[in-house]
Image (cartoon, rainbow, N blue to C red; front, top):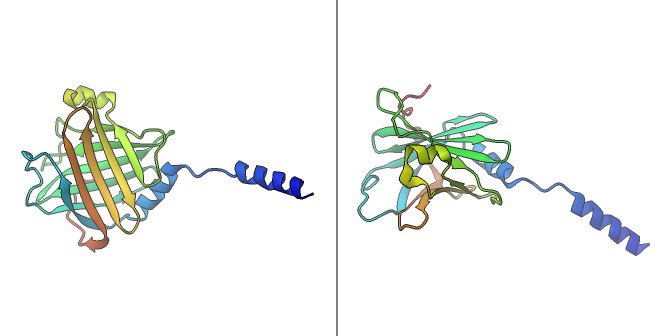
Length: 186
């Protein structure tokens, strides 16, 4: 009888549905909707000063069941928005770049789809074919978003086969004032 109970219990436990890590990541990100946070560069090429000395703010501005838009402000520059979209197999990351008048930059909509085997707190997005068409040298780019609820949000880029690395850490323990809308916002 004990053996039968053990077999039944084991079968029941192994048949329990596994939570999709993309679902957990999405739920955790949705929980930040409406909030803004400041970040700091913790890794960048020594010659790249794009973010140096500027206030870096992310704002989880728009959340629907299938799209999350996160404007990323660099000082007064409101040209960047990270767009995360649910797909049949995971999550897609795109970078929407706009000019101050709201028109799309010629280098925009690059990114990729999440890799299989994602963790609920870390998703990698290798460059897709569209990205290679826009930025050929980015063919080995891999963007990473890490999310530790209540602690940190990390946006990172590495170009495999090179020493090109960016990493920006945002402190989720301290919300900041909501920034102005990004350029071209609806």
